[in-house]
Amino acid sequence: MKSYTQIPPGTQILIGRAARRRRVLERAICSVFEGWSYEEIIPPIFDYFDVFAKGMGAGQEEHIYRFIDREGNILALRPEFTSLVAKTVATRLASTPKPIRLFYSGEVLRFDKPKGGRQREFAQIGVEHYGGTRKTADVEILLIAVETFQRLGIQGFQINLGSVDFFGGIVDRMELPAEQIASLKDVLNIKDQSGLEALLQTLPIEDRRKNILRAVPHLTGGKTVIKEARGLVKNARSVEALDHLEEIYSIFEKLDLAQHLTIDLGEIRGFDYYTGILFRAYVRDLGFEVASGGRYDGLPAAFGEDLPAVGFTFILDRLEQIATPSLDTGDATAVPIHVDQGFAKALQLRQSGKVVKLCL
Amino acid sequence: MLVIALCKGRLLDPSLELLNRAAIRFDDDVSLSRKLIFESTDRRYRAILVKPADVPTYVEYGAADIGIAGRDVLLESHADVLQPLDLGFGYCKIAVAGPKGEQSINGSGHPTVRVATKYPRITMDHFNSRGIPVEIIPLSGSIELAPLIGLADRIVDVVETGRTLKENGLEILEVIAETTARLMLNRAGYQTKREEVLAFIQALENARR
Image (cartoon, rainbow over all chains, first blue to last red; front, side, top):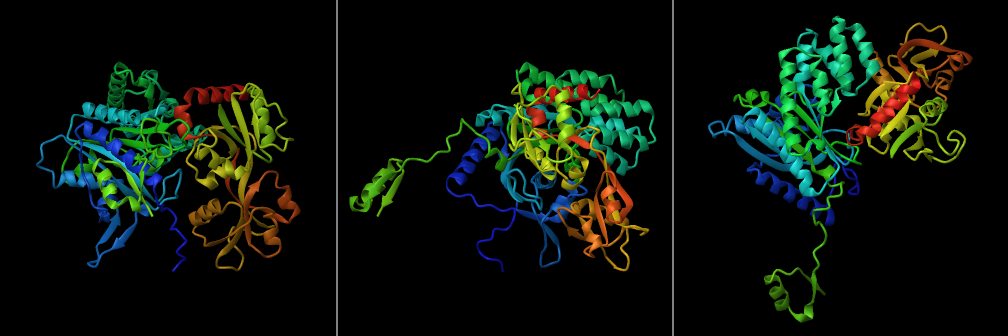
């Protein structure tokens, strides 16, 4: 056994002020979720490995902590909540009237490189919306994300909104093998123009289509991006995605929130389960995203119930690094009680709600 | 103010020259000074000088909004950063080299090829893709020495002119990839400081024309 002083990489211990800050943040965020009529779900910390493998998709297995129970089943510590919640909604809550609004808060574990304040064990807090109409639910989810930032007093936040379907519609017609689509996504996701150019040389597609792909990394910004994109695509899936994004953007404009929204049609990263909108939230002066989410209509279906679904999750460990001016996470001032003043005095102060600290 | 991470070494002068053409100039002589932080004359940029292999790290963590470094360090680091521009300068090959006269990247005689390198990840990926068992011997400099004194059978390194290889009796056996200087951006900075970042990219693109 290693020395007791050694801490397993990727774990951390929150003590005192740090722990208090986490709980205050958690409570503030939960109160926003509750304000939109979301109910809490507390799922188990482990489930069958297949649940997560099915949910997160190919290439994620290596990030999952697995173990075997006495009957030989492969279990896994939860690497995220969405698969667990989707499974519960599709099975146990199958006959519950829709829409179903749920939120969760807790630790997840991923065998990953600790980075940007996210350890291997980290805290996620998020909402999931099942069985609602697509447009309303997408906007609702985004508004909750906005209100969360506002509730914490965070000013310079930006939500980067894309759609799996815009890119999907473009590549659907190219009939490329899965590996080539994956390579395309890889270069587009880092906006690598020269890498894209090199890849396009090897792809058996018309020049017109290559030009569409060349434009994708630049399709990022305000509403004009949608207009620009309309000039590029005619296929129904991409056009529908653009209509949808435009509607969301217009609603944000009317609510005077559009300054927090960036359309990014080159944003196609994420777990395999995403099927529609896709977004990530960033805060000025923090190098990593603090929240991510999107639509995952196929996920409940994978567990037996065909339902539209959308949600997002905040990484609490990253939010903790940002100034949250509207939250008071300071120490409560305690009334010092000397033992010779008697315990009765302490009890009396406690009954009136005062914080006491016994001094020996 | 945007922070630009520049790498010390062979890419520094061409990087500064490009910035100069984009009208981004510094009060001090960046390549001669011993300072590590420089402010541009217009106070819009702050340049920091770091080791090449560290540039992707500074950018990924957002300590720098922008970085300029070779594709070799990006491939090695797997850092999650945006890489919009190939800046074209600093061309090198990343290659497997060995003693002159050897035919393949397989080591002679050993069941596992011993490869000395500053690029363990690129090396591992390359040999794995060929199904050749490899033992990585991590070194941080004078890589060419390793095969000469029997520390390794092969090396993986960046090769600019091939002169150092030649003078040490080595030659390229296989080219793994080509590398040039790349512009990299922090993902969050790209979203939250969009106008400044886009203005910078535009200035660089104009300067390269």
